[in-house]
Structure formats: structure tokens, C-alpha cells
Length: 127
Image (tube, rainbow, N blue to C red; front, side, top):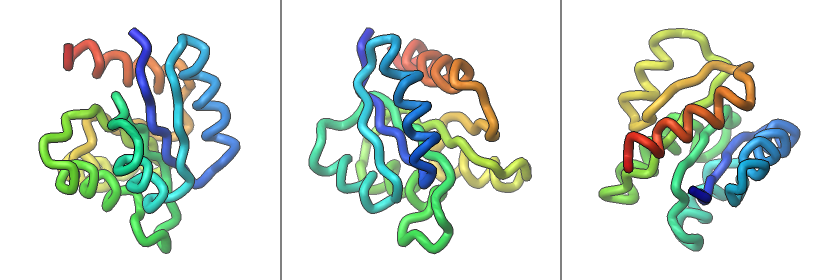
């Protein structure tokens, strides 16, 4: 199955590595470096099959946790899998991410294969 993936992270280098990890198996990828750009893509583009949200600057008008919540609340009925990818190892942050609507929470650094396989596992569950 070829999927359309939205990758969001403030780190452009990480976005490039993730893009390569998803495009090798034949998926199409669009990237955003901030929450506003991600929400704009969601409005203008076809709804992606999955979203991976990484760390966004807390000064960003739409930081990571808020973006996850906005995706779930603002796009009513959105069942697109959302994977949160963060440097925060605190269980409280993980709980907040899952409560905000993330389907999975991975801690950076995670291998590219772990990230890709997590998204593919969520596709299988949705099917």
C-alpha cells in the first residue's frame, strides 16, 4: 500500500532523513517545519494517511501537543494515525500526547525503521 505521509518537525535535517525512510518503500511525503504550515497542508492538501509530529519550538504558535490536539479536534472525525516523536522522556509528556490524540509516542532518537514500522502498524490496525 502506498501512503501519503505528513512529517512535521522543526529540524530540517531530521525531516530529510524521515522523508527518505518513507519514500524508499514507495510512500509520498510532504513536510512542514511548524504547526501553522502543517495545519495549512491539512486544509489545502488531501488528508494524509498518517502524520508524524516531532518537536516544535514551544514559541511556535502551534507547538507539538497543541498541533496534535488541533488535528483531532479541528478535523472532526479524523482517524488518521498520529505518531508523536519527541525528545521528552517524561511519562507526563507521553500521557499528555496520548490524551491530546496521538496514537503512539516515540522518544528520539528512534531508528527510522522503528518510526516507519510504527506508522505501518497503525495502517494495518485501521484496515
